[in-house]
Image 1 (cartoon, rainbow, N blue to C red):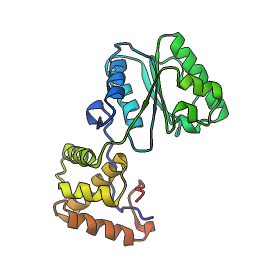
Image 2: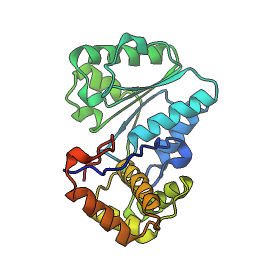
Image 3: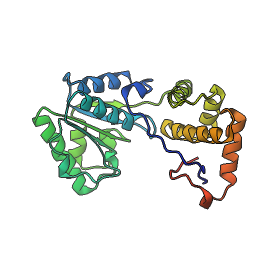
Image 4: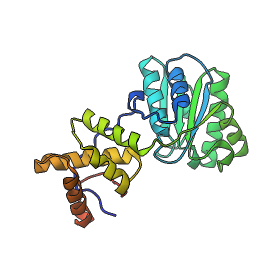
Length: 239
């Protein structure tokens, strides 16, 4: 697997306005209401395949809640072991619960109980519905206490439209054929595709050419042929 030798890592947008709703309107509206402090079920679990937008929705909810003055936090359990320090937030989002160790599962069990008892919000997300999670039985029961939403994948037409929208937001004009080709021949994950477009845009600027399909094929061919050790880009893009 080769890396694209480009030096660009722009932050991914994680607001509600940047989320492609697709078949997820019910979950979208429920999380917006919680972020706005409008009440509703305070225990929400999102599940679905990689790249469907679960992490995006959790982060968007936390960002909006903080903008409304709530004490909120996004905890990525895949990067930071879940600990007792997560207690006390008015709105807490715990992502990637699938990989929690035994002690972390005990912490999450306590967090869900504490948040509900205090009338606070806890959001969680994983790849499988609660009943299929390979976690403690008492924890899977807690994960299914409140609202459970499956986050579905948008269709390719919507994905292509969103890629063009995000590219324009970064000042990059990209042809629709480029987005469709990337969806067919590269990753179908929107986050990975967005980062790839950022890198391709930098390559187009460096070469003084518009971001067209012939240029995309040329840049990716050069990247695949170049020795990985020569790459200067710090991220990884799984092809």
